Image (cartoon, rainbow over all chains, first blue to last red):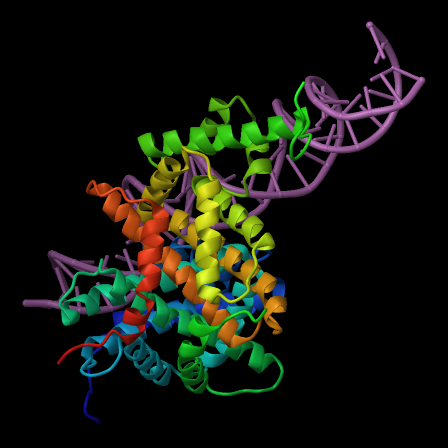
Length: 210
Length: 210
DNA sequence: AATATTTTGTCACCACGTGCCAAATGGCGT
DNA sequence: ACGCCATTTGGCACGTGGTGACAAAATATT
């Protein structure tokens, strides 16, 4: 027998995680095949042999299960930031690092799931809204955690703007990555993230030429 | 008789605009008094003496009518940008200017309506999601309009990032303005907008001190 | 093995949102 | 003033997302 690392993690918790993952997976395939609106949550629940009521105990809404990969990412980002040392680096760069580490922690099939998720985001209004809302939530959470480390409250406009910029980099990265993937160029997300990060000065200085 | 400026604007169009405004107004007061979820769209429709079916011909969703002031703003911004001359100024600043001009165009009761709208955004998940979605839509629209003036397509990451930054400034402004208004400091939005705009360098350079 | 706690299923219910068609209303020429 | 056409509105029915309440099942604890 091998040593139990991290946590015991009883049967109960394991089962819960599995059903959640199963629901997200079933939803992803059905949404991809039949479309988001054409698929009912009952159909998703049935596919996992779970009642509709139980579905809504795992996900707040139909849209939430569609962006499950993003929710997973934000959770990982929150965890990574809890132990990160902010010393010396820019806030924007700190967010980039937390994202990179979080991406590194994600399971192997995550990029594919994320890709499908982004297609739904691109084509469906309500899914797009939920995606933005989830990112915004992560953003607030992050600002609240960062504030004490900087000696300000999380209403400080400079901090807010910094966090906004960090997430702006992520959003741009996600889009660039997706469009790149569609035409074969399959670069890893952290690489794209670094590139976009480096483009910040050019972006704020971008001027129309008369 | 006086000379007709701008457009004839027949009775039909005028009536449509009025019902739309009435719906938004009725919704605002009811949402403010009874709460967003406690208010049914039927109740809003009844208050304007219009059928529920008609309500949904004016607004895509219950959330949409809640953020009507923002929708109005984005429309005005789009209009302003159509005639703005981009020469010489930064893209981020160009967005700021378009916003300032648009804010100037809004009717006198707009700030109050916007304020109530922001309260709903702050307390309600789905309204917040819709608000973010609407801003994102305006963002894309703006990027698409700006791209040809810069000689690039609207997938250029630098342009994207620039537009993201411009909107980040707006979002930060909105929050700052609201929190300022709550405690008496009632400065006009364009002023706050300028301040936040000026804080960009500080934000991207913001560093944690060990 | 018995008990306590947490999760799940069933049922009922409400309200959002939409397709469909008939009725009403404004625009317009004669 | 009248009737004709285009557009807008109302009424109805329907599917589905989402929730409260309570009983049943599953898991943890002693």
